[in-house]
Amino acid sequence: MGQNSRLESGTEIGRMSSRCIVLVDTSVLLLISEGLASLEDFIQSVPECRIVVPDFVVEELKKLALQGGKRGKLASWALSNIIPRFEVTRC
Image (tube, rainbow, N blue to C red; front, side, top):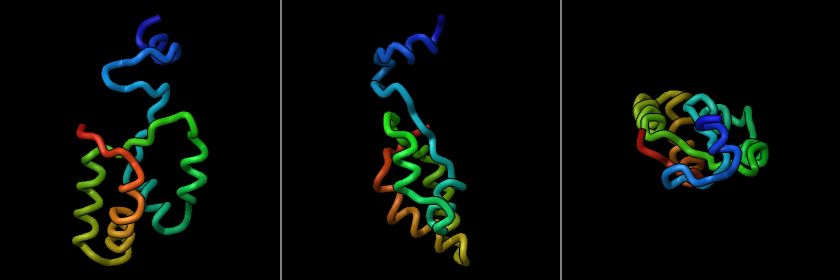
């Protein structure tokens, strides 16, 4: 049975109690920022899941924002408008 059976039964693993965790990467955040994907649709597509952004994704967005250009503007927008809606976790 192993680890998957613990997740399926909903037992708490460490401090996590959600049955599902969705890790969001930089490309997803940039797609949402550009309007090519809907933030609300994304959230609704995983209703029982915790949506988590790894800290290294936030750092990557900060670097992109400093570079400027189109991707920099999208990254800056993501940092201001999307990241505050999700949990950021240290990896």
